[in-house]
Amino acid sequence: MESLLDLLANLNLSANHLVLGGIGLSAFFVVFGLAGVFGGKDTAVRRMQGGTLVQAHGTDFDLVQGDNSDPHGLLQAFVPSSREERSKIGKLLRRAGIQGKNAIRSYYAFRSIVGITLPVLFVAVLALPAEVQVQLNIAHLLQNITWLNTLQIVTALMLLGFYGPSVWLRMRIRKRKQAIEHSLPNALDLLQVAMEAGLGFDAAMIRVSHELAQAAPEISQEFMILQLELQAGKERQAAFLDMAERTGVEEVSSFANVILQANQYGTTVSKALRRFSSDMRQSRELRAQEKANRLPVQMSAVMALCMMPVLLLICLAPMLIRWINMFG
Image 1: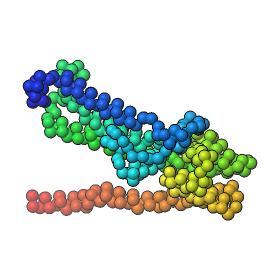
Image 2: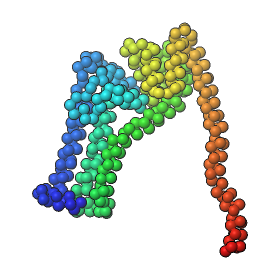
Image 3: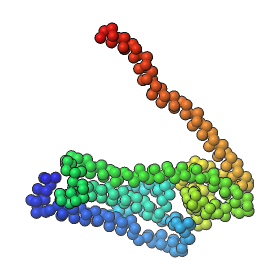
Image 4: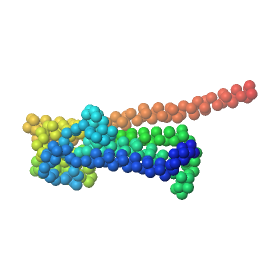
């Protein structure tokens, strides 16, 4: 720290100049990154979105997203040029329930900006004058930091800012998949009741989506996106298969196959749903029994690990005492 201040003094610069320079660099990346992310729409997208779409439950799903074109300008520093990589991240974002048109750009821009901003802020805090650090009650935390510790902390902050959003995204995907798995049986029951009450399949899905908007927003969102795609002219088979791929839940894929087979062979959808609900509950019960049957085996390993040292101590302690009395 002292060598840094000496270098600044030789250059006729103060710590305030360093702070201002870091703040200016951070502002540069933030402004230009957000300008590229939230920039104007593509011409093709504006033409395709000539009409207005009614928002479902106050959420704009951005079904018309245009092509996944290559990034230009400063976005090339944030967004990877590989279409395969962008497609992979877009799939993960859709599974997490993030359906925005610029979701991929926003995700990469956020990772890059946070990964740069956190180390810059830490270095700016280190460059603050001692009086300011004392006023902020952080002087005792920074007084013993060496250059090696600074390098380690900056590297850790950079990794945290860049890979933290990726970990958060995977945790959100896992949480959303669990929510869909838990709410799917209730949604199917409501769908069956609505169809038996006289509603058509599409009308029943819309009604179930509105009814579950507060209790189960994840499955409600998926049902509403499915209906919006069907109303936009997408083929029914492609819409159902996309929903199954978008959620990543095996039971949703089975539900899509059941509906498609019922439409293909002309069977009653209500009976197919009733049978599917029964099989799904039976399958969940079997999985619960499987976990319960695995529990004694897992507990036996833990109990053996905890009890064996105590048993050995009890068995060997008298022998050890006799050996000490005899040879001690």
